[in-house]
Image 1 (cartoon, rainbow, N blue to C red):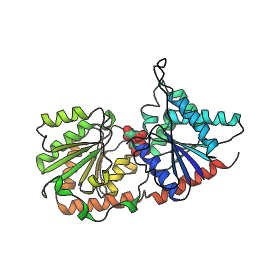
Image 2 (image 1 turned 90 degrees about the horizontal axis):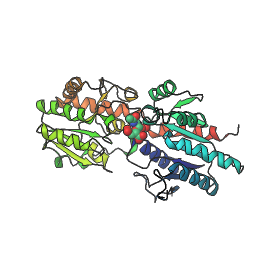
Image 3 (image 1 turned 180 degrees about the vertical axis):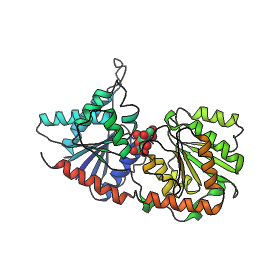
Image 4 (image 1 turned 30 degrees about the horizontal axis):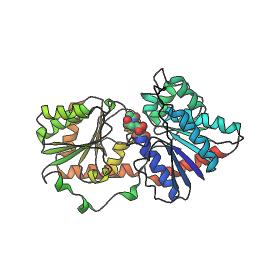
Length: 375
Ligand code: GMT
């Protein structure tokens, strides 16, 4: 198949899922065309069957906001014709499903029919898409998609509750490539980060308010009062400065390391003992799944789709949003002795293995084939 993938090219989970899916499809000999404004961060352009088409939006001073949707839909029209695209898969409804629908209509004028699969990822429904300024356009473009998928049952329920959706929504969970996990722990450079006695606790996100970064710092503050520990903060975003200040105020400057965005997440997870994800809302929690497959148990909130990923007592623990005391106590329960930690590490790995890429990618292929059947 010739498949076009539209996504955000940044470190965000939706872009990562779209990129990993495209790479997996290319390995199965499909021609995969990424159409976005920048090369996706995890995409290696030298891989066979992978193509990247950049959407450029020329700056014009008349426009207070440059019209990205217009440029994207025009690029989609050109690319579908030029590369004989069979199916269009847009990740994140805003504005991709909207631009995709416009491209479909323009192509139909020329007698070209192209099915569109829309995957809902989370904030496009729960935070941004639900805003009255966007809601009619988001509802419209979801209903006009040929096939709609969501990354968790919880996100499907939210979509049906918040929008007037006429389409069937298929749940296809996010995935992970189990074969890429490094089993040789001698490669982990743990000694660079902490002493043998210290536990290593990690948080990875885009540091937006929804991630409750202050909870991460406050939970760590409680943990390190009981156990020697370091906190690795990976990622960047609007809450980072506040978090750095809070760490200083609590006297944690030497124990909390801020990395910024990283392309070497597996190297960091390789020597991590615990992952913190106390988010306000999370449709799936891909970061938690990535931690778990690297044998890192997760302390998380019980919001959105996280309970579909993190199983309490096996791969970590779940608590109500903002329950810092319980999250801290559960973290200490996991970290307090080596045997307990080892059990949780194995539990996390086994739970994450259920989301192996080989189980999930065929589901998307099946949907593409279904979408391509003329109605
Ligand atoms: O978490 C974010 O703010 C980024 C966002 C995105 O769209 O990139 O992540 C969402 O999609 C991910 C991939 O499907 C999910 O794993 C995240 O849980 C989801 N984030 C939220 O719902 C807040």
